Amino acid sequence: MLDLLYPRNCIHCGGPSPEPLRHLCWDCLSDTPKVEPPFCTVCGDPVAGTVQHDYTCFSCSRQTPAFDRARSVVRYEGAVGEALRDIKYKNALWMVRDLAGLLLAGVQAEYPEVPFTAVTAVPLHPARRRARGFNQSTMLGVALARRLRLPFREGLLRRIRPTVTQTGLTASQRTANVVGAFRSGLFARLAGKRILLVDDVMTTGATVNACAQALKKGGAASVHVVTVARG
Image (cartoon, rainbow, N blue to C red):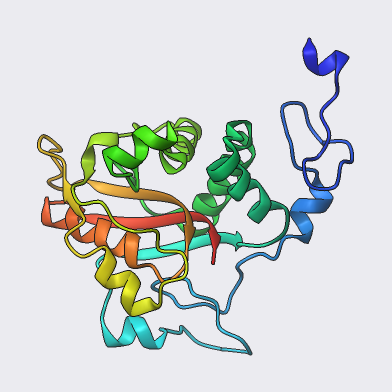
């Protein structure tokens, strides 16, 4: 009823939203650069130019990640980049619905053949979660799991060591920052499970790789990653 009285506008351009309960218009979504081939078949990192065959980036060739595959839907730019920052730094939790729709499209496009057992998300350290009041990755994961009709299991992963923000760190510093930061849940019962791991943004992949290591050490059969954006 409030939407009838006060129609929503796109948070990015101010124009009318295309659907009820949405906050990003189609024009702004379409203007956000998509992550499209060619990209690394393992981590999904885009490569410039034309590649006519399966491509594995230097980083994944040098050291195979713990996750089976990772994919991102869009670049960390434009309207979606703004929405992700607003969620994280301005508590704009109403944007979760729009971004979960992007995640669903990404999973359907990139993982149609994977029979996932459960969805989980990159956890925050308890101290940081208390300070922020929420974990945006968990909220995105819950919304995505609902759309996929899969259980969301928050307790599969624990962040046991606080880390500094990854923003501004080099690739090697990011990797060192998350070493030993995650552990599988005490009662996770991961044996044989095929896990879909959700995060908001992926840059070098150090965080999701550390999470995948913990999940597989706990017995997970496979770990596939999906993020809204690629930094």
